[in-house]
Length: 357
Image (cartoon, rainbow, N blue to C red; front, side, top):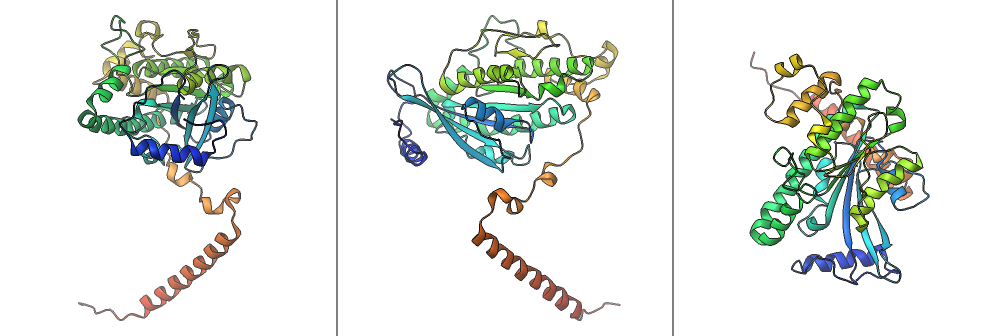
């Protein structure tokens, strides 16, 4: 059991011991420490770090996330009780480094893992591509873990699959129409202050689409910005995942205001049909409701042709990672490489090739 004085190193050792004894029951018993993990991912510069710092009540200036970063927080549920631990992972680089999700999400912590997807509302042309790419890769990875668990520990696999439906009762009218994400999911629409300046029709399309996607995946949805009041709403949803705080029952679906919809509290009838004319809908060929909404959304906001990899800066040139000895050695190796290129080029030009002519 972690102590309040534990260092990050102590927690790491405890995690290794737990992985070496995977048969231990992960259920939290009275007096035991609650331990959860959350992965934050989404658009580059979308505000993920700001949200994490606010959740942990840290007065720090956010820095760009290089690749995959880790921090943690502790909270006591009651007075004079051990502090629970929440592991916060943040994936940088937008969609370019999505394969790194395999590092934090493992078969050892899958029962206590959740995902927070942060989408930049000020960039609607990147919204669907970012969302689809990140959720698809994450879902595929989680499903592979569940497939292995079905053989190694079928009871745990069955428990996780059953929990997917916890927020949607069997008598819910949309029970047969949704496809819940395999682990808890929160979708955060960031930069609401910029989004609020958009044309009302554009806001309506984006809001309805994100409501549908969130409901379809069994996710909670919240719009936020740097506003303290909005950050507190996002924090409430995250604290529910991280520390088991009571889940908010309040709902805000007014498209002229920031959305706040906890999982399971929306419905297809309230969301309405995709925002397109009947004639346009009739011309669109889709095999699933999700595909139909995608086509409608991308008709208004065509996917931006961009490559995350091209925008990824070389971390070796970032001043926040300056290390004198390493930089001197790197400069020396760069000079040696350039010399090699010149020698190789010179040798290549001097080579006498046989000609068939």
